[in-house]
Length: 141
Image (cartoon, rainbow, N blue to C red; front, side, top):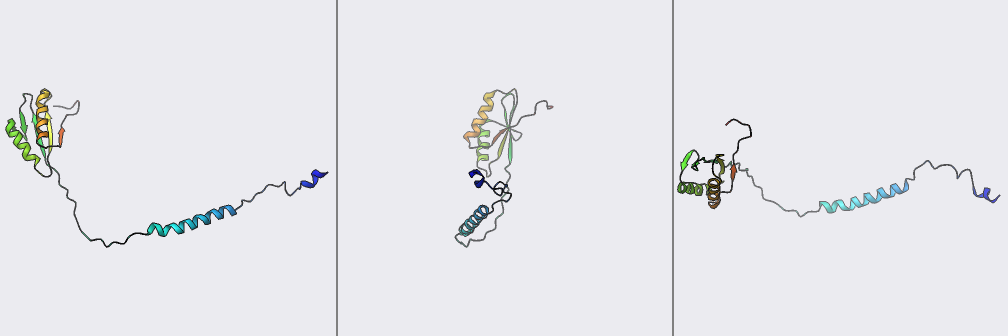
């Protein structure tokens, strides 16, 4: 008897509409936040900067072919050199701007000591761009 007074047929029906009030409240808060922060983001110090025109310099460094033969002889751009001439050529190359790239061709039969001496001389003279040239495996020699 008392249970029937608390229940109603209208309360048992499912609610099929979405409550839009919280969504609208959140959207209004976000709109206010964006309206407040946009002028702060665009605030900058106005500076009258000088105008200048510059062209990028595209200087390609030359390269030097440095070969070490199986007998230990050293060739600088296809010219055989003794240690004194090699040191002078390396010192002259180190002063160039931009510094040339050294492409080191070492014979596979050369002693490691000869290659290490050439590398040490290049470093002592200030040459920093040194690369070993190899041949792909299986390529004709």
